[in-house]
Length: 606
Image 1: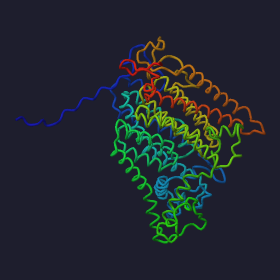
Image 2: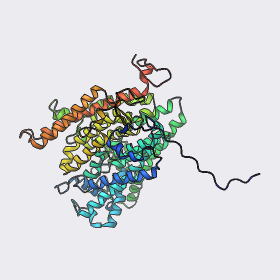
Image 3: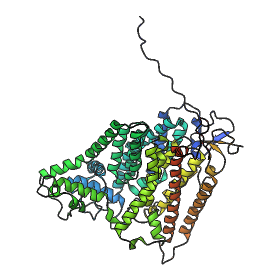
Image 4: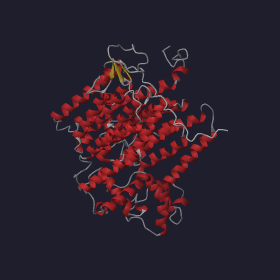
C-alpha cells in the first residue's frame, strides 16, 4: 500500500462569475468613474487581500479628513451638541454608579439610548480617562473643546466603525455576491461605493455620532440571514436594537422574514422555538450588566439622585412588583426608567426640520399639527406607519425570499422614516443602508439600480444640509456629496445613468437599448423625468439659499422648501422599493397578472 502524499495539493481557485457581457472587448469602457478606478484590475484574478486594504485605506482617508472639520455644537453655548452628549455619557458612566445612569441630571444630555450604548460609552470613557482624566471630570469638563479631546473622540468613531461596521459591510457584500453570482470586480466597486456613502460620513465623522455601530450590527444580521444563520441574525439584531432604538425601523422586516422562513415551504416548529429562545436570551444578556450593576448598588445601599422622579411606566405595574419594600423594586425601577428614556413619547411628533410626512404637512401650512392633542397624533402616526410597512412585511412573510430582503428592509424603513413618531434628520441613514447595499446585488451596477440609489443618497445629503450648515460642514457636504455623485455617474455632476446603455459597470459604444443580451435597463421615462426634476430643484434651491435671503416674516422658508421636496422624493424611493418587493416576490405570477415565459424568469403583462 502506497504511503499517503506528504502534502495535499492546493485547490485551484474557483473561476469568477463573469460580467454581464463576459469577456471585455475593444469597444467596451468603464460606464462610470468608480468603474474606471478599478479598470486596471479588470479581468485579472486579483486577490481580495490586495484590493480590500486599498479600499479600506482610501475610505479611511475621507473619514479622517471629514473629522478635521467642526462638529455638532462646537463652541455653541449653552448645550453645545451631540459631541458634548457623547462625551458626557462617557464621563457619566465611569464616574457614577449604574443605578444613576438613566437618572442623572436629565436636563444636561441625560442618557436616552439603550444599554449597549452605555456600555460602549463606559469602555471609551475608561480609555479616555487613561489618556487624559481632565476630559471626563463630571460637571467640570462640560463644553470642553480641546484639540486633544477632539482627536480622541474622532478616533473612537473611526476605531468603533472599523471594528464593527466595516467588517460587517465586507461580509454582507460577499454574501450578496455569492447569492447573486456577482464577480469580485463588481463587488469591489460596490463595497467602495457603500463605504464612501456621503451621508454616513457626514453624520458620524462630521456632525459626530456612532450610528455605524448600530448599522454594522444590522449588516451582520443581514449577512447572517443570507448565509442561513438565522440564530446569529437574531443575536446581531438584538445588538443593533441594544445600541440604538431606531434599529426598530428594520424590526418588522426581520420578524416577517424569520417568521415566514418558519412556515415556508413547510412548518418548522424547532426553528421557530430556536429563534424565540435565542432572541429572548440575547435581550437578557443585553440587560444583564445593568441588572448586575443594580444588584451591586443595592448591596452597597446606594441611593438614587435626590432629583430623581419615578418613571410613569412604573405606576402601571402590579403592586407586588413595584412595592418599595419588595426586593424586585430596584430592578423594576431601573428597567422602567431605561424604557422611559429610550422611548421619549413626550418629545413630540418630529424633531427640528426633518423631511418626513408630518413635518412637511406642518411646516408647509397644510395643517398645523400642534393644534391636535399629542395622544391623537401618536395614534395617527402609529396607524400611518403600520399602513406603510404592512405591504412589504406581508409580502416578505408570504414569500421569504433573499432576493427581496434588501428592498423589503428599505421599504419598511422608508415607511418608518416618513410616517412614524419622533423622527430625526439623521434617521435617514437607516433606509439608505439597505438601498445602497443594492449596488452589491445582481444588476446593482446597471443604470436602473444605480440611478435610484444615487437619487436617494444625493437627496438624503441635501435634506441634511440645514443641519450640516449649523455645524460648519458646508464644504465637506459639497465635496463628499459631489464626489460620490460623480463617481457613481449620477447628477448633478454626471448623467451616465440617464444616457448611454450600459451593461453592469461596462459601457458599450454605438448600441441602442436592447442590443445587448442580458443588459440591465435604465430607469423608465417617468423615473428619469422625476429624478431630473428633483435634481434641478435641488440645484436651484442651493442657488437661491446662497444668494437670496428669506423674507423677514418667514426666516425658515428655504428650510421648509427643503423639507417638502425631500419628503416627496423619499416618498418616491419608498414606492420604488415597495414595487421591487412586489415584483421580486412573485406575487404577480401567483395572481395571474404576469405569466412565466417558458422556463425562464422572464415576465410580461397579461
